[in-house]
Amino acid sequence: MSRRSPATTGHSGTTQAPDWLGTNRPESAASRILDVAGDLFVTHGVTAVNMNQIATAAGCSRATLYRYFASRSELHLAYVERQARRLSTAVSAATADMTDPGERITESILTAVAGVRSDPVMRSWFSPEAAGLAGAMGTTSESVNKAAIALITGETTAPEAELTLEARFIVRMVISLLMTPGSDAAEEREIVTRFVTPAILQRY
Image (cartoon, rainbow, N blue to C red):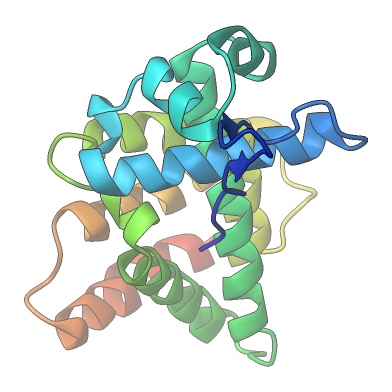
């Protein structure tokens, strides 16, 4: 997990905030803020962290923070979408050599679940306090839905409404396993193989 750039100490011995006016400010500063927020989510819990804490930890003013994220909800959504893109990339790499559609769907879902569980920051979104927020954002975010469809099916030609429903189904299945795990990995695999994968495959 990437960490924020620490504040530096000037010649006077006072602590100086990171340079928020650098050449690549919009992209790098927003990413740095999200990194800082991730650290705080792990330490304090997603729902307990406020914008003041994030600004302080990032070494920027609240005004600067709000230039990048107009509200805490907007920051949460940006964080969820960034992590979803990263997870999608990792899962795609892990399943790239699979040619059987059913096998690819099953392994993509299970690999996504394992990826969240193995990452402390992503796992913090599925604590009892934050799981509802994660579920709401995951199923309504257009970016998350597109990542789910591209990852699982590669489908791009179906009607938009159908793609959206299918994406939400896939995201809900992943969230369900994260919020209510099976008794063991074998049971989770059987659930996905017998019930989830056939439901997705029936359209093809």
